[in-house]
Image 1 (cartoon, rainbow, N blue to C red):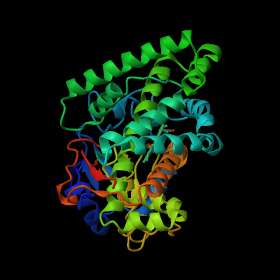
Image 2 (cartoon, rainbow, N blue to C red):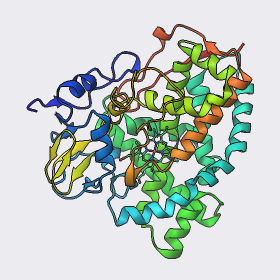
Image 3 (cartoon, helix red, strand yellow):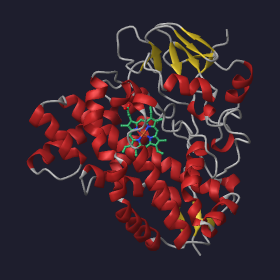
Length: 394
Ligand code: HEM
């Protein structure tokens, strides 16, 4: 337990999960790491420990409490106060209740036909050869989150650039990240001001109403969480889509199977979420009292990183973990668990099901335009994905 390996580990070759996770899972499943802030934390690597941490309210997410261990020191998206993901009850419960009504399965299903039409329109308009990441995987979720928020015509290019900058872990300096965050923040504040004069009928209107009408959401919470919804609402889904298509096309048997058996889409998407949301988690939990986990004890005040990507390939929960098997029954942890379970999970699932469903139906011959080994990967960004993915339609 004495090693303090530096965290995050970074990805392995071609966006794979770093080998360190499997080594630790075998040798020291609840070992410690040194965080970028200089603090230390336990890192879970097994499914059992990760599930136990995520579902246990004795672990808090508010790392802005005085004296709390943090992942990053100074500015970081993941230290932002007033953000749902780093709040504890009762504030978390209040804000979560306000936002969750918009993301119910019923609400989300109501967007399905529109998404299907949008996807078909987008894919039909693209040339024979195109960059799936630039032209499809990111523009589509941006469009969807703008619809959800009820903000058509947002400057999507700038939203993308700010989001990338804020998620950077090493390629940009802290000042550059802070600069991007401040610009993004100012843009959202302006958007909210405009929306107050001319309210739409999306989530932003609901959030503003809650602030103005019943004073349940502070101004800062309003701006911060709007920003987070725009960012979380497209960055993760864009990453999942880009990685998923590459997995299906290399080898191409995965894609072909969906062309021939479209009924497998739901199970396939769950497997893609399990296998392709790979990376070092930026979220911390802090024990509010001593907690016994299956692999050891975490004392009050100590921090734990729920190692979700590692849990998702733990062979004791997922036999033959690297193989995509649509029929698996064990639930992956890519959307977390418990109180902080991803607010957008229904939406993200639906986006993946519809886009991959429409793609395989309309473009049964889609294939990589080059070699998978030549695909460039992002560098220094917490969400690890192809930087560019050239594909051919014909
Ligand atoms: C494939 C896509 C996605 C993945 C893998 C993902 C993953 C996650 C995970 C693991 C958490 C839990 C963090 C924690 O436990 O501390 C989370 C929380 C959250 N996600 Fe997602 N997410 C995705 C898409 C989305 C979308 C589309 C939205 C918004 C529309 C969204 C909004 C949020 C919010 C607001 C939270 C904080 C919830 C809370 O703390 O109560 N996510 N997400």
